[in-house]
Image 1 (cartoon, rainbow, N blue to C red):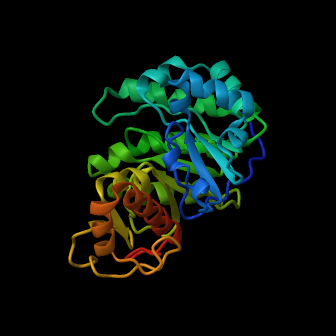
Image 2 (image 1 turned 180 degrees about the vertical axis):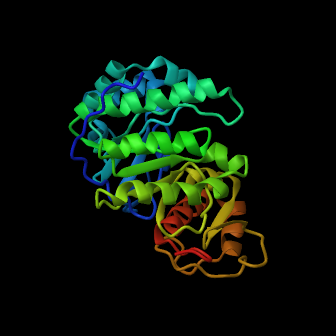
Image 3 (image 1 turned 90 degrees about the horizontal axis):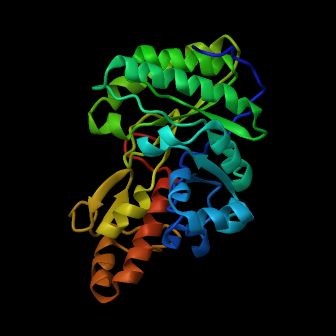
Length: 299
């Protein structure tokens, strides 16, 4: 049963075009230590829950002091299914109150397209119940766009909009892998705009967890791909992921604040001489490519 839904004035998070995720346990992803500025980051809650040492340190100081990050910190609740089943409302509230992020997603759920509908509907109702509970928190809240089909997505979004949620994240990795994201996302955008139109609000959507630009100008993105792909020597250029040996980009200079005229060919040479320095440059280049928002056929 869905509990009686409440309402609360919820202000927008105001997502920039790109919000990088970080790896809490890997300081190599703490890009601000390299002098790169970004207005927001996503911190995955599951990484802290599974690491008692890190959780203790972050909880005692709060995320801002623990990370030394001066921008806005958004807490991601996207996590493995076993943790989704384990954490209770009280667990979430304690974690959020201790970590002190600037905004948090409502708790994640799992709604697989190949699972029995009873399971995905149960998870959808669970999402709405948690979204209702989270209205008691005194920080900005981010709704989730989840569902095994469009009917479930519409149902959950309608309830969240009724509670005045205005900022939404769509975890999209599984849909992207299945080739379904480009079929579903246009419908989601239409549904959300229609639901919010009556209240005169303009919602914002962030696509979470995929390392490709989809070409929709009205959405923001968040991923850890800027960091993970660099470890494999992959290079972002105008939203496309490339092998640095690709002849289309190999001898094209980049004038970001890290490359300063360096070409992928220069990075290939550096990889041989000093792999550590090369990976650092490539990592920061990839981050800045996402930040600049220069996308082929997009922004």
